[in-house]
Amino acid sequence: MPYPTYFRYFIPEVIHEDKVLYLDCDMIITSDLTSIFTLDISKYGVAAVRDDLLEEYDGKEDYFNSGLLLINNIFWREQGISRRLLDYTRENQGALQYHDQDVLNDVLCDNWLELDETYNYHTGADMLYNLFQQSERQLNRMKDLPKVIHYTATKPWKYLETSVRWRDIWWEYNKLEWSDIFTRWQVNDGVDVSLKKVLQPIHRAFIFTYSDSIEGIERLAKDLPNWQFHIAAHTQISEKLKQLEMYSNIKLYPLVYRFKLNELVENSDIYLDINHGDADTQVLEQVKKLGKDILSLSTTYHGQGKQFERVTDIIDYLKNERFKEHIRKEYCEK
Image (cartoon, rainbow, N blue to C red):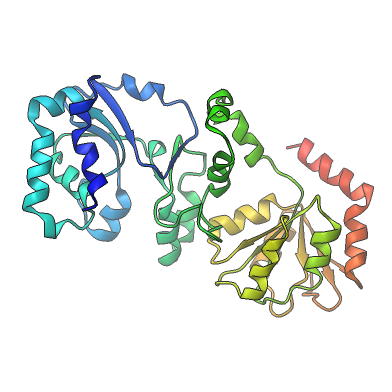
């Protein structure tokens, strides 16, 4: 195991408080966690969130995720947990599939209290549900913002990992200085006020494509700097499309998951049917059902929405004050 993984074995030896909250470095806290310290864990070594994904897909039993641990320091010292963890690690070095997480689960198997999933939501669940084509479970799992987001599996800071749930929240924090994080932490209805900017709708155009030929997209990005263009695909994207990220108002979503696809449709102001090749009829129907405008060119028309002869005609339409007023009215009513 990597050397740093041993560090949490010794937390009760170096921190003298009765309880300690440990969190992995790939987590974001979105709400006040003070109440977690009021939990009675006097009979338990830790409180943690059940790792139901490993239980279901990997056969683990009564297994917790060690990304967030509320540690009972008194219990650890009285039961000699630190020494037992070291001994178990040494004796089972070759059989530890999930490293120190296996060790913690085996040593504390009868001495942990289950926390609600909101304290350690694993974004990697979306990748598994997508892999096993369980889109309904993916859509129904954790619809509200959890108190603690755990970016397991794919990471939000990696290039083009845009299907990671709540990716923008990580980037919002990444842009802040530490002093800003402390001074701006004002909880309102469970969500940091500074994060509400990330969750608020802005003017967005959505494109779903099976092709890397998107008519006039660069002209649209240049002439409409106040619009963001979100381009998604079920597959990996070509180098031609990757080049579009040179524009700050174009975002790409390769290998898009169903929950993210729904989110992009719902948060868009319009749908641009300007990709050559096939269209996704399910996406078009979803856009139509939500009452959003579908704008298309005569050369890319797939049977839905308004047709325009030139890209400049679409640009003029989006600059039209009546259209802007329609968008403002829509969001004011929400």
